[in-house]
Amino acid sequence: MRQQTENKGKKPKLPASYNIKLSSMEDVRRLLSTVINGLRKGTLEPDRSRAIVYASNTLLTVLGHTALEARLERIEEEIRKR
Image (spheres, rainbow, N blue to C red):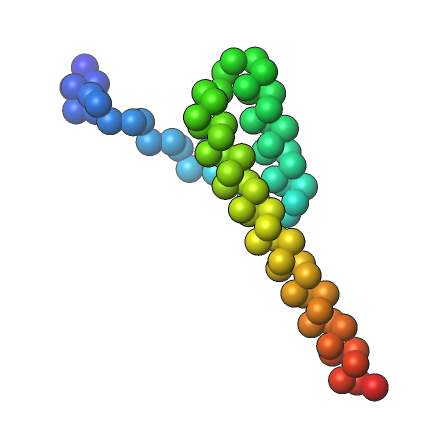
């Protein structure tokens, strides 16, 4: 009971295990699939879904730029070797 009154009006903290690995485009694809399914089932609020999709889109852009940069560096290294 005491915990309920102390946390009243505060959002509960999510456990550390709630973190999701998002280091590849495939990871983001799986997250987006989960969000879409949650929306369809009615278990995820549209506002939260919108925020996740927005952040995912930003992350996909960063991942794409990172991959492109790595490819460019490999190509430049090959050119320097010649």
